[in-house]
Amino acid sequence: MTAILIIVFVVGYAAIAFENTIKINKTASALITGVLCWVVYIFFTTNKMAVNDSLLKHLGDISGILFFLLGAMTIVELVDVHDGFEIITDFIRQTNKRSLIWIVAFLSFFLSAILDNLTTTIVMVSLLRKLIKNQDDRLLFVGIVVIAANAGGAWTPIGDVTTTMLWIGGQISTANIMLKLFIPSLICLLVPLVIVSFQLKGKAERVKISTDFSEKQHTEKQQKIILLLGVLSLIFVPVFKTLTHLPPFMGMLFSVGFMWVVTELMHGKGDVEKKKHLTLVSALHKIDISSILFFLGILMAVAALESADILTYMAKWLSATIGNLSAIVMTIGLSSAIIDNVPLVAATQGMYHLNQYPMDSYIWEFLAYCAGTGGSILIIGSAAGVAAMGMEKIDFIWYIKKISWLALIGYFSGAFAYIVFDMFLY
Image 1 (tube, helix red, strand yellow):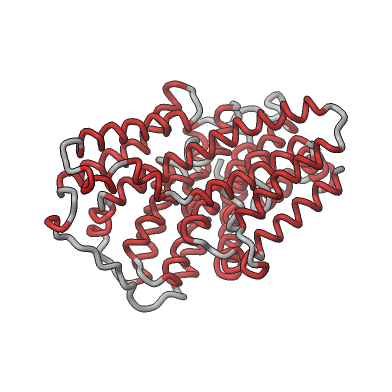
Image 2 (image 1 turned 60 degrees about the horizontal axis):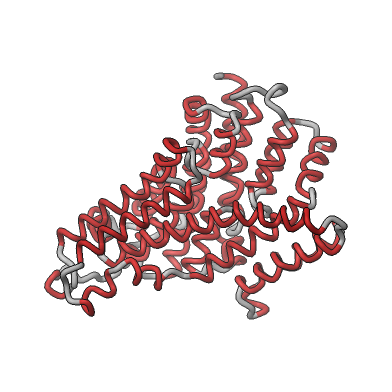
């Protein structure tokens, strides 16, 4: 069974990677792969009920991620239809590509630490659509955003789902993880950012946007209100989670409901036809559902590997074969570029216990960094990458050629920085 499962996953993965060559949409390949992995698993398992129970459990976890993504994209789209991002783009007057990429990268890095890498990527891709007209230039910027968002999310408990898992599991504490990982995460961004800066020349052509509010169906005041409330609604999600201990998607759903009420009250007295495109219903219609389904297929396939204990066996094999703790954690980080980092971190949490490695031990901090930033090496290695891939239709092979080597250099630079700092400073 194990061999067949791995073959199905690898073939499906290859179909996604070579989407443009085989002329089959990656979402179709992901969905078929996800279903077939579970078909193989249940076919070779005698306890069919246990497989179904496992499927439903994983579906609950995956649904939480999908609803989170759906809610975030809806709020961002709602801000966009009210031209809220124009306010931010008007402040970013820099058109020099070298200067602009530094502004975008640092904005992504720190925004990701406050929100999370997934939401930040969605917001920044929407902003880049206003800032850069040329698609080739924009895709390079989006690639740096993925690196920056994942690096920024690694050093706070709410910035990445894996650090959140370690935080909830008692493996890391808030102050310590921020202290120990800030500089390595920053180096993970700075090294590729410096390299790509030398590749950029000239000025970026911006998208021409009409600022004449007489031509628009909303006022300048409404534009500012929606932007402010939209950003606050996204920031509210981690606060909601901290206060209620409910999953993040619950806070996101609340934020969507809140924004829905606000827009209904704001445009309730206007002409129905004129306000139609300003409503949250209209924003929902504009969301790229295929990217949501792609995410579903990928996560379902990985969940099948986890349920079949393939990921657990792999983690134990690494421990027995490699031995060195730093090398094991770095390998897990590299593996997260291929396989979702959530089950990898979950497997590692199961392998090493708190009585062996207590809170804030070296292994947990280094794992938070490696699992959080390693996913940048491939476009489908992180939630941020998958979101960017769906929104900008990024080609898998293009990302490998243009971005993967930069992410890999940044990953190792930050990892070695953490090891050196731990040896000599802490």
